[in-house]
Image (cartoon, rainbow, N blue to C red; front, side, top):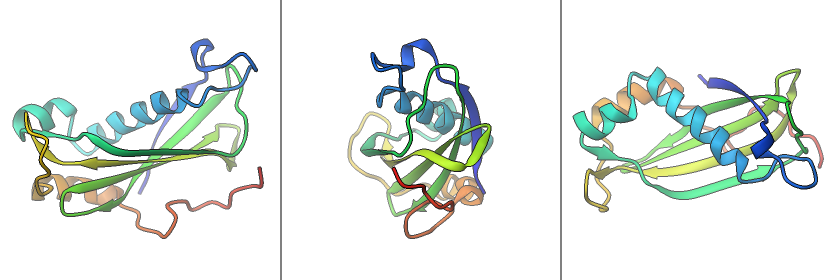
Amino acid sequence: MRFSVQEYVRWEDIDAAGIINYQAYLRFFGLAEVELFRSCGLSYRTLFEDLGIWLPRVHVECDFFHPVTLDELLVVEAFFGKIGRSSIHLNFEVHRKENSDVIVATGKYVLVTVKKGQLAPTPVPNMLREKLQPYVEESSNGTRRQRSAR
């Protein structure tokens, strides 16, 4: 199952060429990430304070397929690709609201579970693993739609 959020491309998201700046995708991914965790019943406050878990990113990637411009409404789908021993793979697909068949960008975070205040990996707690499981979508490339040529 996938979770999605909608967000407009704002003035601060575009560059001098009038298209979305690559860094803006991290803002879109961040919005989808926090709401996905919240939909699992896991606010970051719960993770940090109740479970004593931090989730630093150890890998971030983004691929761009089509330019996006100011005021376009984007849909960001978020889902977990894999939950390993101490890592959580979080995938993103972005498309325009009015044309959901064309992926404009994809992304991936690899998060590592660490105990609060420490930076050594620790196993993903069973409760966390169980709450995330409905949003796990394992596949070889993390995408379900055909990408158009650039």
